[in-house]
Figure 1: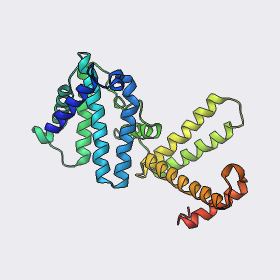
Figure 2 (figure 1 turned 60 degrees about the horizontal axis):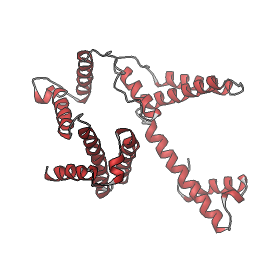
Figure 3 (figure 1 turned 120 degrees about the vertical axis):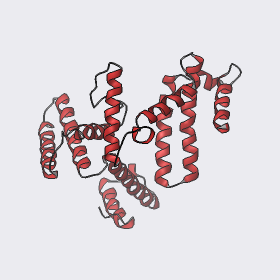
Figure 4 (figure 1 turned 135 degrees about the horizontal axis):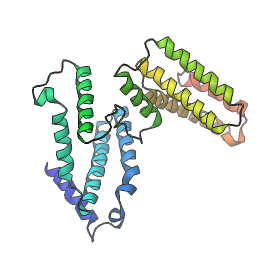
Length: 262
């Protein structure tokens, strides 16, 4: 733990009166976007299979934890030890099959027990023990929709067959298309949300991650559009100086050139 203690000491020095002006100005609020960005960079490192990069990016996430703890320490709120203690106690409390006399035969039983303990913890705090409590509001919308659906599915509120969800998704698309002709923006937004929610539900039901699927499609689009830009550049042109027909033609070429037929 010597390196962890060193990190804590470095952070304290950066926040000291003679430390870094930028670090000293930061608050919990100003640091919020950095924690999100660093977490996504960890995902990029995992997807790239780059172990060295993963070490560095995990360090950046750890820095954010230590940074927030230092800000809180200066305000007399809590210390970094309190953060470590809280998660340690939570892990022990929610794994009675490991640290106590509980039993769990498989991962599904572990998750069920985890949710039960979370509910009991909320009741102990006098909070509404809804199974949907605890889903972060700031999750990306597709991911949050998936989490919501998994939660309710876990207590039996779910579809029985894939075809049923497919029919529902088709209905939502048709309703969205129908309302597009109106000037009721609120209803259009509502119907679009229903479309996306139903597609997420369908993906979840068949074991797919909508977030990963859309991420993959985003990457595919970027590859193909870069192909268009490169080919146009060879002609001394840019997308802005080209016609839609030219770009559509190159888009079709990109599929075979990149071995991506879909």
